[in-house]
Amino acid sequence: MSYAARLAASRADRALCLAAVLAWACSPLPPGARGESAAHRAPGADTADALPTGATLLERAASQRRRVGPLVATFNARIRRREGWFAAASLTGVVAVQPPDRLRVRLFLPAGPTAQDLTVAGDRYRLVLPLEGREETGVTCSPYAAGCDAGNPGLLLAWLFTHAPSCATHGCTVERHRDAYEVISALTPAERLVATVSVADGDPTMLAEEIQRDGQARIRIAYSDHRLVAGVRTPYHIEFSDAGSGIRIALEIATYRQNPGLPAETFRIN
Image 1 (cartoon, rainbow, N blue to C red):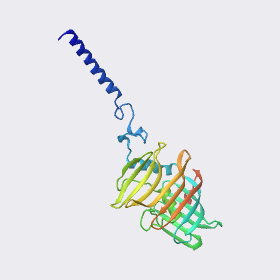
Image 2 (image 1 turned 90 degrees about the vertical axis):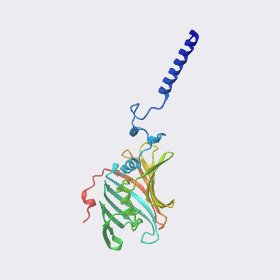
Image 3 (image 1 turned 30 degrees about the vertical axis):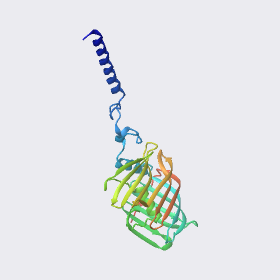
Image 4 (image 1 turned 45 degrees about the vertical axis):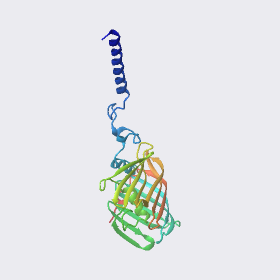
């Protein structure tokens, strides 16, 4: 081989080597190669392996309800339903929450008398309706469950502040839509439970939970107007709607007061 040929081959080898070095240096590194784990990357990262599991999203979003407790909140409620003493009513109320599963709700009519006093402890509740001279005890339920009185604002509040959505029973799939994830659990061939979780601020925040039947929203709970309470994004506006029964409940939280030192007697069920 002539000198010129050897020189040209040497230059070609160096060029190939340089290209290989540059390609390695500029190529995306796998998770952890720069000391970064998938668990610490931003939830909104545009990589397929950054997609969190449904269980992780639900656990972190639901934990917000517990991170702000114990608490006392005052609220206004607007209820519309087809029957009952609050077929169309505007009420005020106060709710005391002791995580994970203690709650007390009192509802008041505009004139001032107590319309309802509800105590929840674990999976049991005690409901007092002074205007009807009635008292009952029973087992708490999800507004998604057949036979549950989802139109009762006290029971709805109890469920909102104590339930923990989970993928454990049915398993979940996750779909990303811009700055939010949808966590989807199939309940029946025609029915699925969809939770919408925001990831815009890095800490998953529940925006909505709904039952969809044949692709249409049947029952929906929407959370909005999130503000910081003790550093935790907490909804000040909650809306519940049931397309089948026509029940609609809108809750406007007036104040949250964290860590009030609630006595155990507040949540006692005899």
